[in-house]
Amino acid sequence: MEILPKVRSSSEIYGLMKSGALTGVPISGCLGDQSAALVGQMFSTTILKPILSEHGLLTTVAYKLGRDKPVCYALEGSVAIAGAVVRWLRDNLGIVKSSSEVEKLAAEVGTSYGCYFVPAFSGLYAPYWEPSARGIICGLTQFTNKNHIAFAALEAVCFQTREILDAMNKDCGIPLSELQVDGGMTNNKILMQLQADILCIQVVKPSMPETTALGAAMAAGAAEGVGVWSLNPGDLTAVTWERFEPQINPEESEYRYARWKKAVMKSMGWEISEPQANGDSSIFSSLPLGFYIVSSMIMLIGAKYISG
Image (cartoon, rainbow, N blue to C red):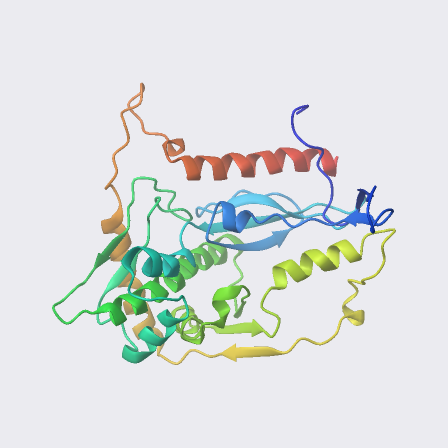
């Protein structure tokens, strides 16, 4: 433990600026960009005590809003490749010149024409944790073109989201009635509508898309000794939302989801690890996956100290 940095809460003063025009200004709050470093997309549900998932999710620390406040934990599901699949279409396949063109290509066809894209470039994360998987595009016909592949790429993001939310619903026992979203990909209206169709629930997008960064700033401003922001719900301004309602029937959604699951199964077992001494392959043979799990374990160990 002595080689690790001291664990502090998400909302407190860590120190003061010592030089320059900001000398004496308190340093408060933190924002770790784990989603960019380790996973493409994360979904979590907050709880006051750590519990273990029975459906492929991870237990992690969500936040601690003050030195003397309780630690809140989360059940977290991570997707290895989400927004990065759009960059892959641009940089590796070259079928678009900018990420925004993917929405235009998908809108021109409005369907994948039976094409399914599993972007398991570095294995599958939650809920499978399968490092042997690799990316595949299946269901191709002579009529498949780049528009259909673009549409399938957007669908892949939505299908992966559904897998995580299905696992959360099973662990929590409380089905979601709506999904609140944020981040740069929420500017893609085709993606947002697809997400509502595949989940069969309402998708809600705030007018402020970067709510993760906003939340970190609010936590910093609400810290004791700073006090420039209040987290009291009555003090917060109203948020405007854009809502996306499902536009296909549940039967069609389930049919497409079943075919996606079939494609996922076909992506597994492509990369065979070197045999281990005991004959079993380890999940840590996948470096990104192993690093992600180890980092979650470290956060839980740290939580023990800040909650105790």
